[in-house]
Image (cartoon, rainbow, N blue to C red):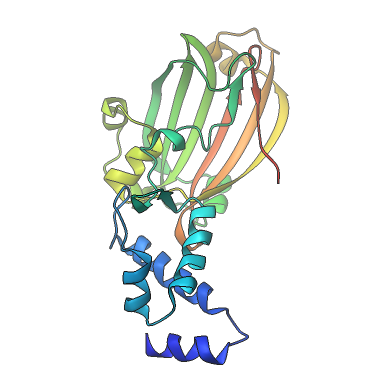
Length: 249
């Protein structure tokens, strides 16, 4: 990393040095050099590896931590973030009970899982060519026994070869944990659109609500490294005893 060391002295204007180090660390995460849940080298070791100051490495890691790619644990070091951590379980599920801070016991029921040619909307969202294979998962989330969320999930078929309904149903952890550990796909960030809709007949039947029941529709595109879209999701939320919560700032 001699060039990086020279860059630190020369203060290049095209990209701050810590951003260059952040990019190198991100590539190591993406390549699997450090697996989800693993301890990454110390700041001192990374500074030596890249030929830069420890402060530069610290600033790069600070940004990675802010983006939920790594997790600092006081006195223990910095670990690669994983969807299996309890703190990550509800990072992408913003539904909260009106009474309490986190949803109660959750049960996931797979209604459908199959491969098909990508519909136009899914192909566009996932940046696929027309007719490429996708995997469709429909599942029902029940909180304390009550149907609460109906999800329709579209995934790129090439990245999820071998994903079946039996495989999803047999997995006991979070769905993103399955994608991470068995398919090497880590969900980094997402964009969402939220609007109110009325339940049609099929949705009402799945969620055990009357036709026309007000629901919250959450449409999500989820991205992995290098801002590649790897999931399109449409979720219908029953909000009789729940609300959608987000934190700003």
